[in-house]
Image 1 (tube, rainbow, N blue to C red):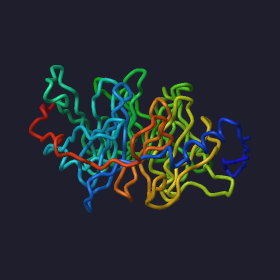
Image 2: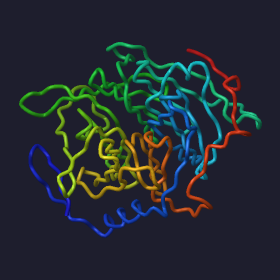
Image 3: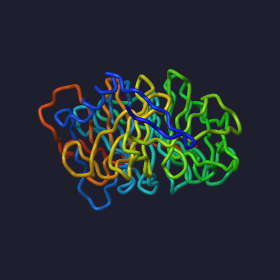
Image 4: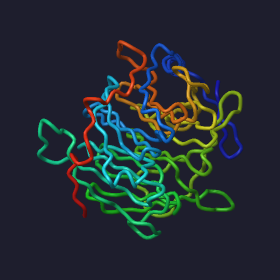
Length: 347
């Protein structure tokens, strides 16, 4: 049995056969694969997002200040490295159902969107129009140190952790801020909480956020508007080991919660309501090992894709498809598309 702490209380979760199968699936190194990135001192992959409609992997690298796209066979397809991106230093990424790439920068205090051109030719299937969203500040449509972002596949809404302003801004698909959610601790001292990462539970219509120092999560009804008081969940495993500087968050099709426990070099899995189930990954550079994992996402078949910045790679856990090899290097000799091939317009 596993348990988690909630306001200094302990609640017990009985492991089910399904829970046990999760541990077996994601800890099995024969079902783990990696995508090695360019070996440069500055290489630092920090977030990843899956475009489920095309089964493409979108990676943002804050050190090289680029976005890279791979298919599920781990083949490199495209890089976004135009002059705007190179100066932007992206720290979070999300992909809409129509293929729009949305990146946020903790350093730039804004977001950029790369929307696919309506007429894409056969020689360049990655042609984009570019838009900027927000400026530095604390008003509506402004950000200060934005962190995690997520798009709702059901309605196209965008949720932005406006971390420096201790709030979540909710945008329509047209880029209009419809609501602002302010997080406050539901305790005697009702101080504000800063959201770090965010994910959307499609079955319960709830938002899940990593908050504070990356040691807790909270739940927020998706349609909240204004101030809300939340109870942080301080998750711990059967050995009372909690989260340390958690920096990645995703949910699967059953609303189970996957957290990059960055300081402990592992991925923690919880039930949809925050009960600890299991974890996988240990510190190291071998297959199935991690060094300070950050952003992660989950495919429709349950494959977990994790940024592994300490090892300058992406890792895939619980892979179902049989592949010819466990590792694939980043061979770009015939695939690199220059920044000039990207069509850009500004608002």
